[in-house]
Length: 169
Image 1 (tube, rainbow, N blue to C red):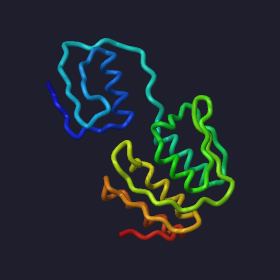
Image 2 (cartoon, rainbow, N blue to C red):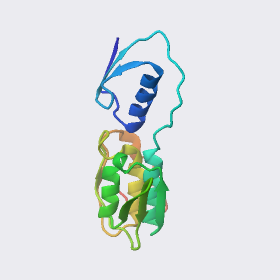
Image 3 (tube, rainbow, N blue to C red):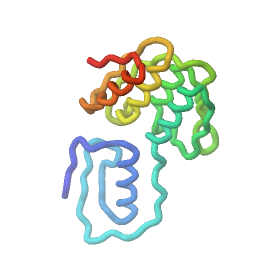
């Protein structure tokens, strides 16, 4: 028996656990911060479609807002991007659920939005740089708080070299 405390709860981790369970693994606590895994003698092959990458979908969504574009992201899971999509709406975007994904569009210059990163289901730290880029061209000022990775702001100096008005503390 293996117990993992403070386990990641991201959809990608849950998906890996679900693949393993389908193969015959015994994993309890999927989607929680504690996983209990009972060893098994063997696993069997399965056919599985992996969960769509929420960070890629989020990056495309931010790009559409930054460029005043209109994009439909097929296979995007809006339930995996709730907070990020809400932040884009706060920035002035229109977000619609469509068929197998999400449509994001923004006709005007976006408004700056505050962001605070947290473990899933909070705002994803991996989308924080994209939102700093969005805020660098947006109307107004915003504060971005990083709670997970202290070195996440390393790229900011390069943005300043490009002309962004960004300060770190």
